Each structure stands twice: as structure tokens, then as C-alpha cells.
Length: 320
Ligand code: BDR
Ligand code: CA
Image 1 (cartoon, rainbow, N blue to C red):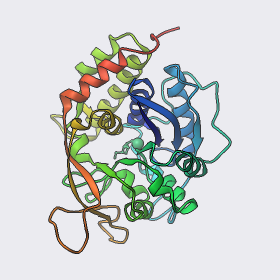
Image 2 (cartoon, rainbow, N blue to C red):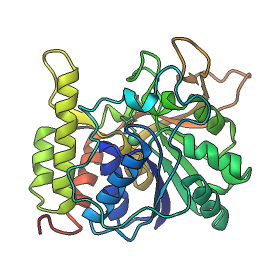
Image 3 (cartoon, rainbow, N blue to C red):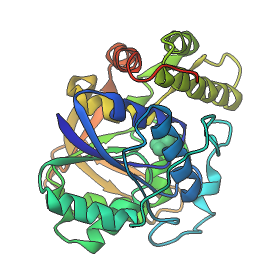
Image 4 (cartoon, helix red, strand yellow):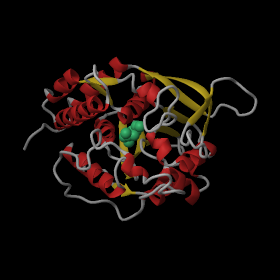
């Protein structure tokens, strides 16, 4: 069983990632940490608590993290407000949480948790990397204590928040730059290029809802909301599908074959007027910078969907 901690900005696809990690028998989700991103961090915390309690995992602790990026909270605009409410939900359609977050801040918790079990825990970061950069600042040994760091983020040939960049990296580019310089033992980046190959359709949402489980019903409601948001944002002839970016990272931890990666060099642009937040990938083996990251260029949609329906058929039933 693989131990993991999920750093989230819940977030609709974050919620699917949390349910997959909390219910998968091959995973031991030790905790969730929240960060400012899709929506303000206090809302991310509340949504994360709702998600865990909904599937009967209110025992998993939640630690709240940074409310703003580490360097330029408002450059060029308040970043968290750039997220599209059509795709994300300020309040997930789940009962209000009974529990509450832990008193310790997320970066402090992260630095202590990984120091206590060096090399034993995987960190999956599916929001801006502010908490991860803060944990590095707190404990210089943090990067070497993490067994593997899997990041949802990055834009190679596909982007979203700007023509150059993907939201998680763009929202705190200086944090991302720190993370890619920190020397983690193993870094896997799952960019939009891969996550947009693991699309979920309305029909597949219906199949998840028909599982009759809390996870299946919630995943169906959440992904259908995302599909509506994508259709509203796209011109005519819109596909009735949506990516579930963050859940692909969790699936890849359990089944590495779900993504196809190349070991390349990645650096983060933190200055360019039009390119800030870009993951600059060096596909060639130039001598200037050695490879430092396993970048996923493809994802296996069939295997991803099979895992969602398998794992979401378990757990508590839906309804009172
Ligand atoms: C990332 O940003 C958010 O929309 C999702 O939660 C995902 O983590 C995709 O760019
Ligand atoms: Ca996210």
C-alpha cells in the first residue's frame, strides 16, 4: 500500500482525486493539505472536508495552507479570482462538514510529516505549488524526504489560463520554479497534454451515478458540472466531455502505465510578459540542463475510466 498526501485547491476535479485516493485499496491517504488556487483557501478547506466526509473518510485530517502565492499575490491580477466559476464550484453540492481543519498550517505539517517518514510517502500536488515551496523553505531536507512528487500542472502543446501556461503553475510561478530547482528524488509532471486525453463523457457520468454509491453520485454531479462549464466556454460543436485533471495524477500513482512519460528537463518561466508560468520543456539532451522531470505526454483514457468505475463502485451507498 502506497502512503500519500494530497495538496489540493478543491476544486471540482480535486474532489474526484480526493475520493479516488481515499477509497483506493492500494493507497493510504494520510492527509489533505489545501492551498489558494481555484477558489480562496478557506473555501478549498471546506470543500475538502465535505468531500472526505461524504465518502465516510472524515478520519483523514485536513490542514489549511497558504492564502496567496509566495511572492506576488496580486501580480498581475488576484490570481485565484481568475478561475472560471462555470468549471469550479465555490461550494461543492455536498453536506456542510461536521469536522474542521487541523490547527497546524499545511507547510509546517508537510515538512514534519515527510521528515518523520523520509522516503516513505508520495506527495501529489494538484493545485498551485505555494505550500510545497513553503515546506522547502521551512526544511531544506524536505525535497529529499519526499519519495515521489507528482504534480498536476504544466502546458506543453496545450494551455488554459494563458496561451503559454496552465493554471496551477501560472498561479504561483515562483513557487513552481523553487520546486523544480529543489532536487526532489523523483518528480512526475502531468500536464494538460496528458489530462485532456483522459476525458470523461456525460454517458460515463451516468454510469458512475448508476453505481448508487456516494462516490459515484458525487463524481457524476461534479464532472457533469465541469462538462457544462467546458461547453459554455467553447464555441459551437462542443464535445460533451471534460478532463478530470487531478484524478489522473492519483490514478497514475496506482497504475503508472496510465500515463506515458519522457525524462526531460523542465524549468519555469517567472519573468516573461506573455509567458509567465510556462513549463519550458527541453526535449533534446542539450548539455546546458540535465533531465529533472518525468513529463507525461499521454494518458490512457480507457484505463483511467475503468479505475474510476471500479473504485467508485465501493465505499458507502448514496443517500441517507
Ligand atoms: C488545474 O487547475 C484547476 O482547474 C484544476 O483543479 C487543475 O488542478 C488545471 O489547470
Ligand atoms: Ca486542482
